[in-house]
Image (tube, rainbow, N blue to C red):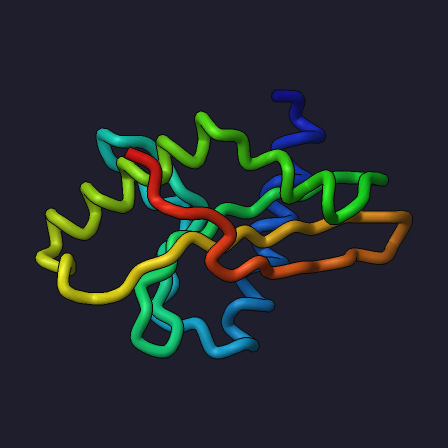
Length: 122
């Protein structure tokens, strides 16, 4: 990934973090990593554990950004979520995967939060 791409991704994650906080997501952990992989954020939303993947694209539609969470990435996030929950004894609480899709057009950012964006993949 280019330096510009890394900076755009960090900018998008910062924007997503602020938006999730505004919407009431709590205890947000950013850039969680473990042996199963990495996820942009882990948070709580009204009693539900949420694994959040942020996709930021420049000059592309929000729909395109959402599609960037591939089957392979969904499978990796599923493994990560199961590991996270097992390691913390959280298997008794509901969990979901959200995608924050950000499209930057000029100086304007369009943000869409897709709750329960995909199911657990084994």
